[in-house]
Each structure stands twice: as structure tokens, then as C-alpha cells.
Image (cartoon, rainbow, N blue to C red; front, side, top):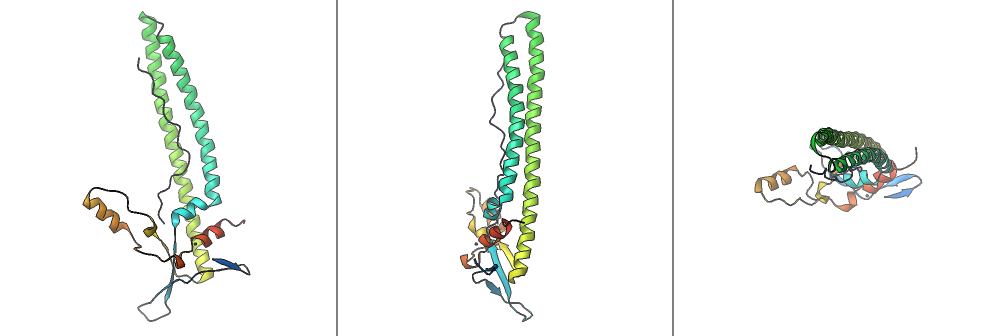
Length: 207
């Protein structure tokens, strides 16, 4: 009977390809110059800032806590998987010593255990992915709310995710390359208008 392959441990951390920094004076965040985009109606120019969304998310204390909780959950699932795998391997060793009807019976039992192992492993992977999605969505909404509050406090009209910070992925097809280029929203963003550090600092402040 074919041995059950040993799988790699379950992934516990949030993997992010999310695309997306200020001096403190008397408790007020003072920022570097920001872009002033003229309005068509002749009113005051709009104030624009940019952030590195991926760095914001990865630098948050809440993300660290979430990853630690995910790691604990993944460890529980992995322990159960290893226990089931060990039971199957012991049964396979027993099968190697049997012949005839007894061997056939144990082979059928091993098939059931192997199926159960595959189902449980897939279940654990899906549950962890579901938790990662919930965490990432919550943290993204927290970033949006914090960016809005910081913008209102500093007079920014627009905060853009500076996707120019992320290199284009290696592709071989022209259509795929054009799709990647067309998806970009920022061609260039001066570091003087980047407020990433201010947002991280604000979000990591104790409540």
C-alpha cells in the first residue's frame, strides 16, 4: 500500500500582497509638504497624501497579535493532523505483516483513515484561510477609519495607496503585462507626501 505523503505544516501567517511616512510637536502630527491638486471650480486646492498600505498593515500591533492567534490555531490543527497521520502509519506497518483476509480488512480500514486525514487536512486549511480573510478585512477597515481620522485632523482631502512602490511582477505575456500596468493607479509619488509612518504611529497608539 502506498505510504501517505508527509505534508508541510499549515501556513499560519497572513500572507499579504496587498498594495497600498512626520514629527510630533505638542501632540500634533506635522507632515511634509503634500500635493495640492487644483479643483475645476476654482476653490482651494485639494491636499493629497500617499501611503504604503502593505507596510502599514504589516507594521500594526494588531496584525502581530492576529498572526500570533492564527499560529496558535494552526498548531492545534497541525497536532491533530500529525496524530491522525501517526495512527495511519502504525496501521500501515501492521498491514505489512498480514496476509489474506486480515490484510484485506486492514487495508480497507487504512483507506478510511487516509480519506479522513485528507478531509481533515483540507478542512483545517479552509478554516485557517477563512480566519485570515476575516482578520485582513477587519484590519483593512481599521486602516481606512484611521486614515480618515488622520486626514480630517491634518486637512488632507485624499489619501492614495502608492502602488508605484510595488514592482511589476514577472510576466511573459503582453496582455498580462498590460493588465498589470492598467491596474496601477500611481505612476510616481514623492516621498515628501508619504504619510505611512504617521498612520502606523497613530494606529499603534494605546487606546
